[in-house]
Length: 174
Image 1 (cartoon, rainbow, N blue to C red):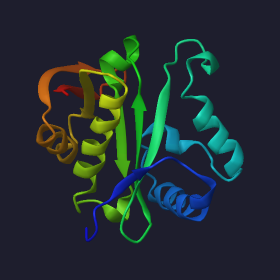
Image 2 (image 1 turned 180 degrees about the vertical axis):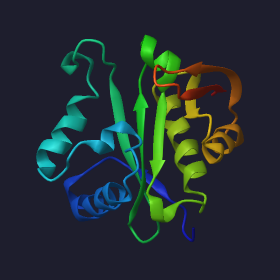
Image 3 (image 1 turned 30 degrees about the vertical axis):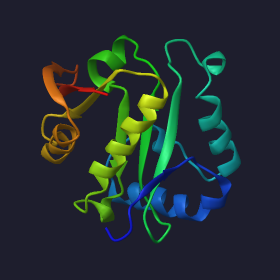
């Protein structure tokens, strides 16, 4: 990681970089994390409109909360990660989703980007007026757990999902 990475709002100017990010993730066969990057972006204007709409309370489907998505850009202007910030929690998010979901593109992992994206996402949650945030990871994701702990996470509990997956829950005071 040469120049400090930074968060940007999704924009049409970064379409080609984002499509490369999406295609790399898709080719990896891994689940899309955060979930919002799993939406097919090939109709890019519709994709951007979806993300903009989801940030407003009045536009939400029942059971959803407002959320904002940002992309992490490196010094070469390449999108290396994405973060989805939930403005508040519902019951499901309180158990297994948390306030912040983030992911780093497969080819850019283990370079410090996860620490950077979570630290910058915490700044965004402060701007929302939150005093503490919940961040979760699967129990087998040791790298993510280290990232959360390194950003001030305090372990609270584990939740077992219906499929048997164990989710570890951490609170970070802002």
